[in-house]
Image (cartoon, rainbow, N blue to C red; front, side):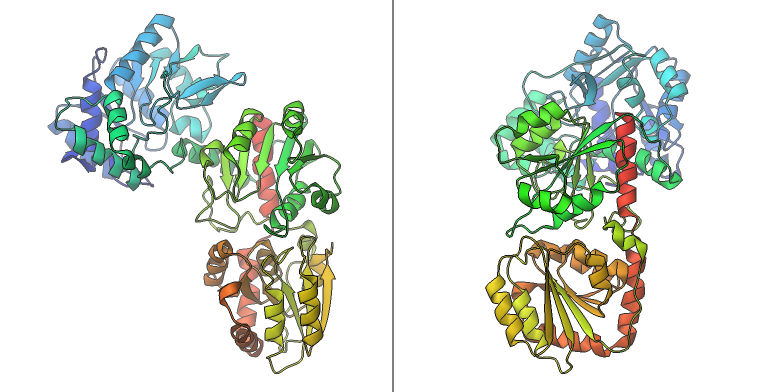
Length: 590
């Protein structure tokens, strides 16, 4: 009942009956199941489950809420189970034929454990759907196996999800799996979110009256006939709950503020692109992040922008994705970890990354195919990017260039004497001339610094704008000491990317003119938190609007003081270290 993604889901109605009743009914049609026991918690919220079981003559056991492995073991012990079949209560379409298939193979092979949610791939067991629809997971084990796991498993993910300790220790346990011949994993029959519930309700509406027990073949025929059903819940990542648990393992390490660093070399590929069209932020961020990784990490850069990456990172280990040989080079490297710092990536490349690495991480990955990623880390786009980690402060993972950490914060002057204008490394849509025009409209004269990066191209427009400006304007191109330059200014007009977070860390009062529409998500969030005045996407903003905000912020000393203080509270400067700790932990466990 305590599900965080869909509260009280096990008793939510489907076709006028609680979801748990459907799970039990489907399971009863197995040829091999002797006895059904509902293992719930001792929480007050779960008294309704106990009442349901009592009213329907179903065995019930109450145990730990978070230590599900302990609950399962003590339940099996109480009911004298020799063989345990695990079916989760959020799978109201569990196919009794799949249950029987798992039990038959388990008995025939004399295994310690079998499941249809793991697959032996790249010389190790990994989570997988085994071609079954999601929500058809069947796990079978002996009581001795369960007891050994209960005694030895330590990680939160191993205690919460019952069998990971068994699944991923084939040297200790005889582990097996079983698969469906046809790939049906695109069908999602588990219930984790409201979209899942809607899908299952539709299936029961169409099949519940005619079938005593619904089989996979019935569901397959139905979604073929009613193709729009699949649009309801297919965007939810596979194995979302287990991924969240893995992050709790990692967060435990972060809280302790220590990580066991493996002396063995760990090979990592950092993947990012940059250009005038897409901006330079991802390349600069990966360059900045590479400095936080310890010496035992062997770092490679993967990019379609080799010349820019070489200039920015000074690295010689760069793989050019425009060359046909790049896949072979990745295979030869045999990386432990690949980090994709992109908003989107092609299906083909993600499949190749997944196949040729042990762990695939996405940073601010907002597009389709999120299911390929083992871990998602949001830095700027918390609403749209894959996020596998619960954060107290949504900007906890902001990666800053290390030079920023030497001196956090500047003082706030009563009068504004200098202004810095930043629109990312490329100013793709050429908003800087519009911003410069705005500075011509304000009453006071100020010194202006314009900073552009290696992706910038509109030099003629910029030159015209600077010549027409009444103020003293200095243009800096592709600089390496951005921290020092920012620190000398009283006010900033910035885009909504990583530069905004850097300015917040320094506490420089800022006006936000987003250089891309997708930046509005970050700009809106940080502005609501108390840092920056967000004007939105630059194309929709006039020079007069910008000028009014410059005048307003310049004249309001108290607002600037509050902004200065709040920025330094929002961005603590530890994001690079935190992500490095996570990746070190992952690397040490590979």
